[in-house]
Image 1 (cartoon, rainbow, N blue to C red):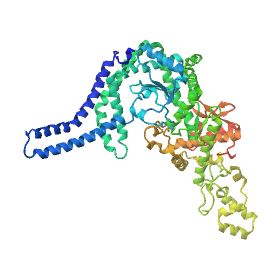
Image 2 (cartoon, rainbow, N blue to C red):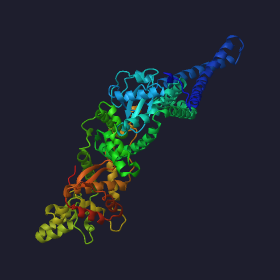
Image 3 (cartoon, one colour):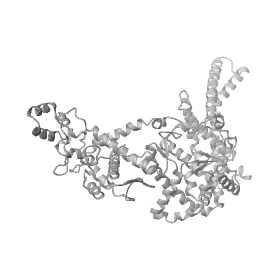
Length: 614
């Protein structure tokens, strides 16, 4: 096949010239390392022929020889590290030809039409991108390397010396795109195997990858001196290496222009749409499940639902759903369900740092069970965390309403009752209990109770009906604590601190996923964390929303639901209620509970009724 070494397209001469510039950096580095040895040889030869007789030449020759030996030793060790260090390999799901014969056939047909060597293998990644990756380094053949807990099998064709690069395809493309669209998108990527086969470009790429791997090796104990020279060489060839890759991309793009060029323009729109839907699916839908110790087993199938919903809502995406009648690219796989599950598990590993294999604390969840097993559990977990924070702040579990609806003067726990349990009804109604007990008990018993303190009185007497109404984890307790009629919105500051601290403790106790970032290579997970920065107020609003949803589910017949673009939602009568967020923000930010109370009243939610927590 003539495309193995020919790169005559536009950009190819520039790519080759830049590759030669990178190789010149390597040659100069080698010359610097050999310079002391060359000088030592000259001095020894001159001494042997008697041209440098007498002092100080014997001493100079000895010093130069010692320096040359040290430089050769250090340079040889550095060169060995650059040659043998394993370059970074993207974690992917390998796709054998038996698992996707039609996909392999499509890729080989593309390579034949563009007269380039076909990729040596195909792999999938849970991302909206596609590229070529060289995996022919000797380190990939030497080891029985384990990538994300999966044992390495026999050496594949992609690891053989001089093998063509591996084609890495974003898994969302296979489920969202049609076969013709996928072929058009992959054409310029597959065309890159032609320039990649050029000896100068392949040699320059190998040198740069070796330097990058040497920098990583320099982080190990006893090898820190490796990183400095490797970084210096990378800086010297950075510009030329970047321009070389641009030239290779330009050459591949020109070669692919004769293959489905018109369709590629339309398919590129689908790439942008897929990226938007995939990002929303991961951050809004998958991330809450991962935090609950569950991983959605069919993310790629879910992205189709997410993108269909996005097409329905977005005017710019109108008409895209009409493509769904064509053959999807996932039909090129023999068992798309199993491959979807494997890429979904890898996505959880890459973006969240979850375990490499399923287990009792890391189990898959189907989309049909997502509302009950993820959404409902998430709400009740956050509601429990909210009430635990209120307990820690000694917030009374229930208070009778004051004239203006604000908490009465007994809202703060009495300092005379250090033994009172935080959140108990008695600790919030001590004065009322004292009055009622004085009218029903003898003066002696009343005096004894008064000496023991209000907490003893509350324990001895029956709680009032108002306290009974608000006892336990109720929404009324949250509403009264956060009410701030002055509009300052300061009631939740201490609560925000408690919730933030509890979340930090839970993350520290998460175990391997929390500390995995200190690992290196394939074990450094999550590689792309999706933890969005959230302010304290946002966290408090999320927890109050969860408490409201729990109360609506328990007392008003609402149900947890799943929105493909927004994640967990509250369903009332089968319809999504999207008007809750501004009312919660009014309570959290302004201390005004009235909009939320009106919303609860219209829905039939009883704030004083205890909710079920996890």
